Length: 255
Image (cartoon, rainbow, N blue to C red; front, top):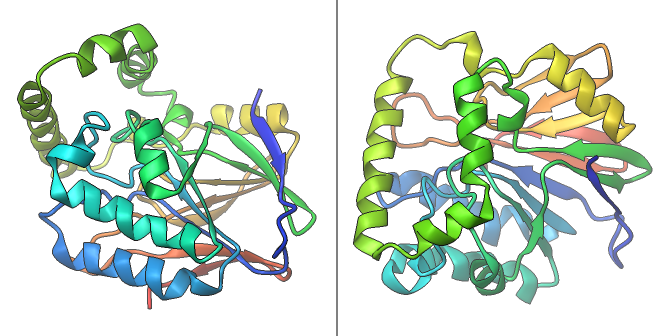
């Protein structure tokens, strides 16, 4: 059953902004610059910012904040939101599900479980990263269940930092090779999983990322919005966000 919360902050008339799949790393400097502009400029008039997973290309434990200056820099940029009275909510993705309490504190963020139901401007909306909806990929779903088993996470986090980093970089290289192949329907959401989430959440609006196929879909159970991934460093410029306000949900391009 999805977790649930109403949106009742002191600045409820201000818009909510939603992003996902930035995959931030030092290898995509233009994308990082766009992220910084989004946080410092675009989001300045927002009530809340929601990151629905895969903020980072990988996250191998909160000791990255100490070992990796880039990770510390991103957390510091995010923390400026809370300093300006803007709430920040962060959901785990398939790349950064090890983001923990130390990161959330450093970023001034509140962790969001997946899925999560919120009420915004009178509408009930279910939020998700999206990977759990890709149920045709049974191999990945098995990995996902194991990777989120706390006992295995404790064992992994006990490894030396350099071991974890080497494994993450190998997995990242394998993922990059996979993206070069033609897309497979295995890696998209299934209608059955989408309809099941609509039913269990008692909503008719869904927002998720993960698939890198931004669109507005009309499903049997309601409207499903897919957030875009961000990449301003390779080929055609990609990126954007959703804005929720009193007039509805709007898909917007980056400034």
